[in-house]
Length: 143
Image 1 (cartoon, rainbow, N blue to C red):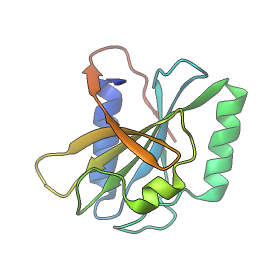
Image 2 (image 1 turned 30 degrees about the horizontal axis):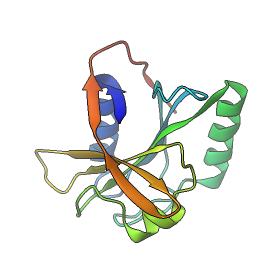
Image 3 (image 1 turned 90 degrees about the vertical axis):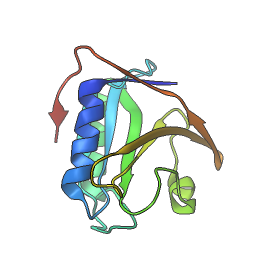
Image 4 (image 1 turned 90 degrees about the horizontal axis):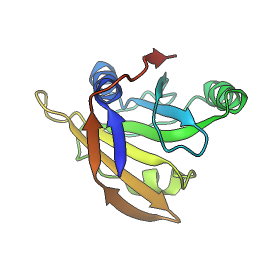
């Protein structure tokens, strides 16, 4: 189960809406081994595409190094789908390389609602998991 603070949930959805019609992407970091998503980091979709996302390699390395220095890890890896449901595509499954991460997808295909779903992707197998949105003291966005 993904337990996520409402403020972080809302920031992910807002990022997806802001980047629409292109896919948005980013990560939520948390203390290593904690499974607690605490710090959202919006990232650039280097592909600038409505059907595909790709982290900018320079930005990705910078974020990874920062997480390493702070004893954090990727707790959530998120991106949006702009015209389809919030479900991992074959490409998403192929690129999923962090088995401990929650893979969150947000669909922005409907202008008034956002579909927010979380999955575990391990060795190419996709398992949807429940999402619990909690009210609490979440931290803000980093860039």
